[in-house]
Structure formats: structure tokens, C-alpha cells
Image (cartoon, rainbow, N blue to C red; front, side, top):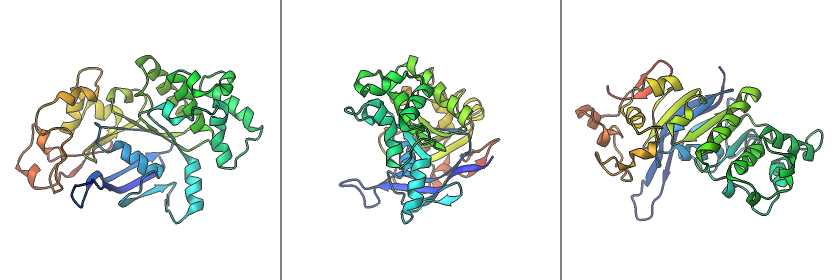
Length: 313
């Protein structure tokens, strides 16, 4: 299967006022591929680096190290034409739909705005394209004349999806797209994303803190901890036969496998306390399997059936 997007050795540090000169490492040597027509899930606790990865891909943050390639071509800030084409090809869906929509603009204008920015005119006119997009996401054409505040949360997120699809992108970056919705609405939005993948062949990077969301929708899942990918592979393999201790810990959470249920974990250091830099396993303070080797060197990357995991055992 051909790779659509390739992330290679991506790292990002943020300066903290009053902190060390090195700052806080949010993403550390992250590499992965997103294949054409694939849904890749990324899971992890708050602060694991998953949202920073999405922002680096979208160009909302600049990486300190590493490279991103789209369709084999490296992204460069020195290539404005390439950047414009990339922004057309890669669209985002964010966590809070209401915060993502201009409250004074009508839905029809919101959806057609990407066409205007990119200088694209739909063959049958933008108004017809807006109606087509509303129909695609299961909303009536009458929504075009409404403002976001007149819609429910689920309807607002469907508008965000319609806007993201306006330019017929090759990749959707969906960062916690259903976490602000209630359980009844989550399934509908996730089913919609899967339907577009199946019908249109769109690739999707789906970020979530709830591992249960990936069952039945994601082809592969990557698990992030302290800015690193500690395990990646087919969804059934990672969720049913996990190899990394951290993945096992996540899956032991109270059903329906909500990562937030682990917030009361008192073993080891506090969750918001970050480790100093060094060559040792980042999961060391919380791991029940930790040995001397975990303190002395980085864990190796071990191949699994469909991906890899980082562990000494």
C-alpha cells in the first residue's frame, strides 16, 4: 500500500518560562506512515504529544527536528506553492466544533470559505457544492442559512466535516473530533468519517484519548507516551495482543476503556511531572516490569506482527 504521508524522526520542544534552556520535549523522534485510504489512530493521555504531532503535520507548529513528506515530497517553508497545495490536500477537524466555527457566519459561507481561499469554483457553482456537502454529512440544505449557534453540537461537527471535505482533500487530520459530543452523537460522527474513507478513499489521522473509539474504525493504532510512539500496529493486534506495558495499562482501565480512568493511578510519579532528559525508558517510573536495563539505556524498537513496540522485554 503506497504511503500518502511520511513522518520521519519528528521532534518538538517548547520553552517554559523559568524552566531549563532545553525546555519541555513534547514530541521525541516520532516516525510513522499514513497510507492511502487508511485510518490511523493515535492514542495517549493528555500531554503525551498526540495533538502536537497533528499540529506539526498541519503546519501550526514548526518541528525542531525531522521531516514530513506528502506524496513523497518534503514540506518546506521555502516553497509557498507547495505549502498552498499541501493546505488544500490536508484538512483538519478539531475537538470543539463551536470554537472552530465563526459564530456570525452562516453555515453556507463557512463551508464555501475554503473554496474561496483556494480560488476554487465548483463546476456547478459553490452554492450547489454546499448543498452537496450538507447532504453528504446528513444535514438538510436549509442548514446553509443558519448560524452555528442554531445547531446542536453534533450538527456543528458535521458542518466542520463538510467544510473539511469541500476541497476534496487526500488526508483529514481529526483531533479528538467526538470528545466534546455525548455518546449518542459520537457513533454517528465516527460512522460518517469511516463512510467517507470507504467511499472516497480519504486517509484519516484520528486522534483520541479513548481506545474504544478505534475498534471497528481504525486500520492501525499508534500509542504515544511522553512524546514517543511506544507501540504501533494493526488495531486488532494492538488492542487484543498488546506488547508494551503502557498499552496493557490503558486496556486495563474500567470499561469502556477510557484512558481518563487512569488519572487516579498513584503508582510512581505524578502524571503531570515530566522526566528529565536522558537515555532511559520514559515509562520507567510507572512500569511494574522495570529492571536495571530500563534505567541505563533506551528501549530497542522490536518488530511485532504488523508494526513495532519499544521495550526491553
